[in-house]
Image (cartoon, rainbow, N blue to C red; front, side, top):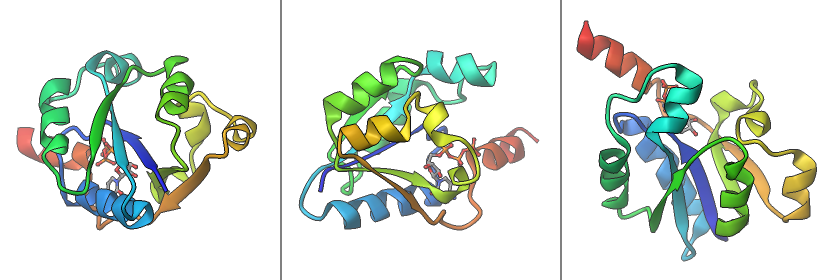
Length: 140
Ligand code: CTP
């Protein structure tokens, strides 16, 4: 089962490691691919760039043993193209997104995922770790 997960990962923390571990368990011997939001994409919906630039966020994630491949997520309408190109069996996201409109965030619909045979899987968040909380603590 090829697994794709997508996110900003602006300061990697134990919650992200937990997410990647869950992706690895679902993937078994197949690939875990992480799509990392580009600085431009993050700026477009957060109004400011991430603390850590894309190249550094991607480089840290690429060193993890649970992860096979990192790809850039340019956001918007390019997301379905990226997902179709990666062609995962499972798209994984933390369950904080279950109450929000994740499909809208990634510019897709359930019908589109079904047509590609991609299963959306919400996994439990690991602890209370949050990049936003870490960054606000760091800057005081
Ligand atoms: N995630 C997780 N466990 C956590 C924090 C995040 O499983 N404790 C997951 C999210 O659900 C998402 C992915 O990690 O699938 C990327 O989330 P991201 O927004 O980059 O991390 P957060 O720490 O949630 O960032 P923020 O606080 O800015 O929302």
